[in-house]
Image 1 (cartoon, rainbow, N blue to C red):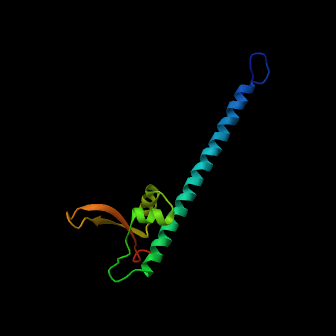
Image 2 (cartoon, one colour):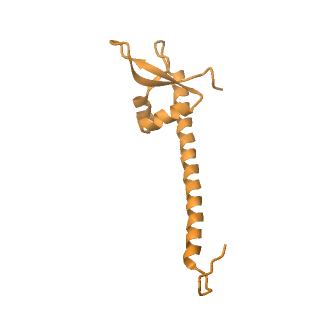
Image 3 (cartoon, rainbow, N blue to C red):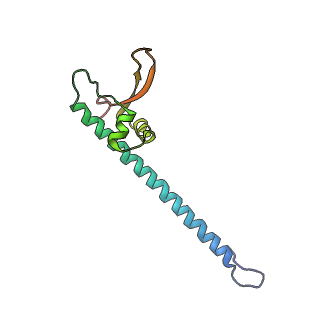
Length: 117
């Protein structure tokens, strides 16, 4: 690339623009990588928690937990729990039904021991 201006000196504005473009690209790749790492950490934490809950369940408990319960236990937002739950191949989403109307009113997640390990 040629950085000459009419007087024959280097155009520092063009050089600064090119450097800024490279720095911005590196920053964007770094931010995307960090986002993916955090997503994996949250997914693994959710999987480990739900797997642990399988061992602590009673006869009437199928191991499913609500999004709100998981968010409070794992210190995540409800959106983060939902995203981690749907990203996982080891976690199965289950609808929670209202006993009076019979309609789904909640999203529950449970560890699917058949597809894991």
